[in-house]
Amino acid sequence: MHELSIVESVVDAVTETAAKYPGATVKSVKLRVGVLASVVKESLEFCWELATVGTPLAGAALVVNSVPIVVHCAACGHDSEIEGVQSLRCPNCGELAADLRQGRELEIESIEIDEPEEQQVSGLASPRVCPERPTPVNSSQETK
Image (tube, rainbow, N blue to C red; front, side):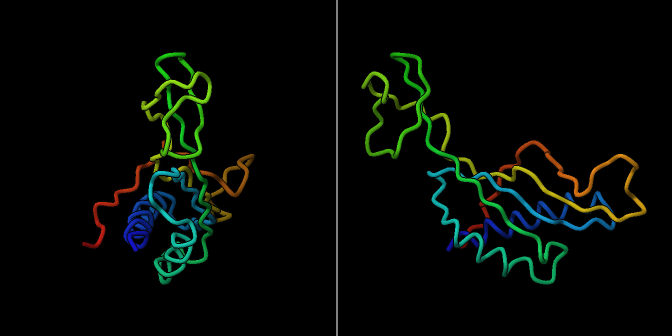
């Protein structure tokens, strides 16, 4: 189950980011996970519950957004969503479309935090979303 090492990397990255907001509470973490990332959503959610116990992320929700497979066809110039990689044919013209544009993502999309009352600036809505540029998850810590 490599999902545990992935979740541990996410917990580390989010904890580091959350430290920049002293006293803030992480409400949720959104991930973008491509269909081809070989990650099981339910396993990520299960591992999240285990990995966040006793951390500043305990109780935070994990939201996993699935990213479909998109290929680019050089013949007709279209980007098309396909069901799977069994056939890399362009749904538009039928030609081979092996230029994979989307579907392998595994990144942190956003972190939603609640800042403590005394640190909130008037007019700033709470909770706040920290939309840092998507952060690829380092899964090099996978167990061998």
